[in-house]
Amino acid sequence: MPEPSAATGRRQSDLAVAVRAAHAAGELALRHFNAKSEWWDKSPGNPVGVADLECDAYLKERLLGARPDDGWLSEETADTADRLGKRRLWVVDPIDGTRDFIRGRTGWAVSVALVEDGEVTVAALAAPARGQLFAALRGRGSQLNGKRLRVSGLEILTGIRLPIDAANMNAAFWPEPWPGEAVEKPNSLALRMAKLAADEADAWMEGRTIAEWDVAASALILAEAGGIVTDRAGQPLAFNKPDPVFHGIAAATPALHGVVRDRLDHALRSLAAARRGRSPAA
Image (cartoon, rainbow, N blue to C red; front, side, top):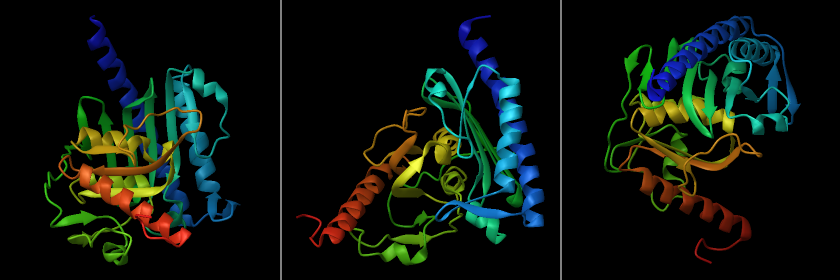
């Protein structure tokens, strides 16, 4: 069989493994969600609980059991340098959106991504409290519950939909108010980005440092739906780095990505200047 077909067949198999694991882990998490299981802080303001740990263990057993030669990176597993020597790596967040999970809200998801040579090739994002299962295969598109996804295609800022707090639409750190509306903002960063892929939002940006596991799956889901996602400097996202983080994210429809990134840059410079007691241009 020619190599491209063999590679595609392997990735389709990988996608099936990822989807089954994410769906089953989501069902496991859902049982804890309804039972309100135990939670504690692993560091100040950073909650973890029985549901996180059980889902993490389950995903590791299922994914590495099916693909024993692959590497592993998860929010709830101690990181080691071994993964850096792996060409293939599973990047997992057992429960992304923990605060919504604890509060009994639906804005949480199980995120599973396969990284090959620094790029995400397979993604599954299960949000069982919403009845949602996203999946994507590099070069083959993305789906929600079996339905093909496509970004909105919005080309101007007027009417833009952002998954942010409504009060921030007119915040002073933007160059000018956003001419659109705030839409639902799940606690899960992955679900915020997936909203763009599902044509429920048009852009999303984050200036803080973000871990690879927060956005690995949703980055592919969005890209395969026709969106663009980069770091705050406009660089493509590269995964399985020694320090597995990104310094800001800008995601949007193709026509809006540049202006969204510029606005994020302005906001970050404004906030930094305010902390120094200067104007942004100083």
